[in-house]
Image (cartoon, rainbow, N blue to C red; front, side):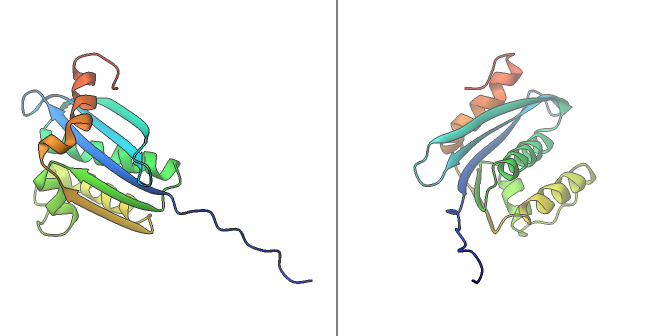
Length: 147
């Protein structure tokens, strides 16, 4: 009789904006992220998480890691990350080496997560194009819920 027909699901493609915020460097910090369906731009989730006392660069990496962990839970196939952190983008794309000891473990975790998707891209965007992720991180610092 042969094998039953295989039904492939449509690829799950997400656009993710991430941002970290630190009031002081280091200081009270938070991560914010928004995951959208790439087909229609509709937000699937908007989150923020307090980090305690961190540097801004570490907060940026935490935002990326938390967002990628959520993308895994949402069964993402392809991920496009948008960040206003030039350092994070250039490190994730291999243009800069990660020299700071405090970022090396976070970079490794982010790269491990990124490697789990069929396609992963990260792009630098101006701050104006990352306002929602910034607002999610700052809402947490202000003691409010993101969104």
